[in-house]
Each structure stands twice: as C-alpha cells, then as structure tokens.
Length: 210
Image (cartoon, rainbow, N blue to C red):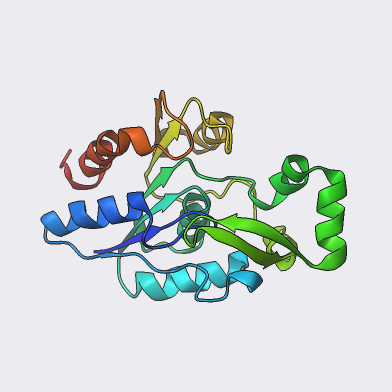
C-alpha cells in the first residue's frame, strides 16, 4: 500500500499537519509521500496539473490518499478516477473549489482576475504574497463539485470552519451514503488545535481491522 498526503492551497509539504502525519506514519514504519502539489510553478497552478503530481506520488498498486482542504478535494477527485485508491481521508475538504472563488472575492475582484489573468494571494507555505493565474479557475471548472469515489472515506471537519463550511462535507456525505464517515469537531478550518484527535481517528480508519 502506498500512502500519499496532499497539502492545501498555497501551502507546502512542510505544513504543520503534513509534518505531524508524516511523523506518525514514520512511527509505524510507513513512508508517507508528501508531494509539492504546485510542482515548483505556483503561478500556473491548475487542478489538472496537481492531479498529475498526485498520480506520480501514488505510483503503482493500491494507494491511500489523505488530503487537507484543496488536498482533500484533490484526493476525492483522484479516487473517483482511480480504482486502485482503497481509502481516502479528507480534512476540511474544499469541495466546489473553483466555483466558490467569485462569491468569496466578490464579482469586481473576480472579474479583474479574469481580465488581467493573475492576482496576488498569500502563500502560507512561503509566508508571502504570490501571483496565481486565472487558469486555476478556467481549468478547475471542468471538474465536478462533488466527486464520487467508490472507496470508503473518512471526512473530518470543523464546525467553526469559515473557509470551507461544514455544509460542504455534509453534502458529500449525503451523496456518498454508507461509504462516508463524517466526524465534526468544535474547531476551525486548520484543525490545528485537534491534530492529535484527527490523527487518532485517521489511524483507526486506516489500520484498525474490523
């Protein structure tokens, strides 16, 4: 089994949750692959390009994908297209990612991004502003808002998440039925205050025999 962790938007393999999960997997003697999803080209980031990075990291054979925020959406998209994915763990998954930008930015700012082709966003992994192209949206709109993978999914979401409201994960769980276990926490989007708890839930889901 190959294990892959997918970080969030404008984040990096050095994020706190990625590091925590990598260390917990290492304690079990398991190598957790944590690829840089922008592949060194954040300005031209697209969903398609990120899925290619996921494919390279997943390798051949069975795979389990763990994703945070945008990484969670990518994990679901990838699983829906690859039957070798056995389980997915989605932390505050950013469903409907391309379609939520206009409402979040406002029509005027969104139109300016479309017109100029790029805008500045804060890159949490680098701690500075970075330019990103409108291709992220143009490419992303070809993908479904709610992927439908055929494998079991554990979804972990904070009730106080204002970045990706928990209602998105509830809708995913409703659509997927018995394939999904949704666990809600009194936490925000980062889930940073409950990382040990979400790890314990993840470990039970992945490693405990039923």
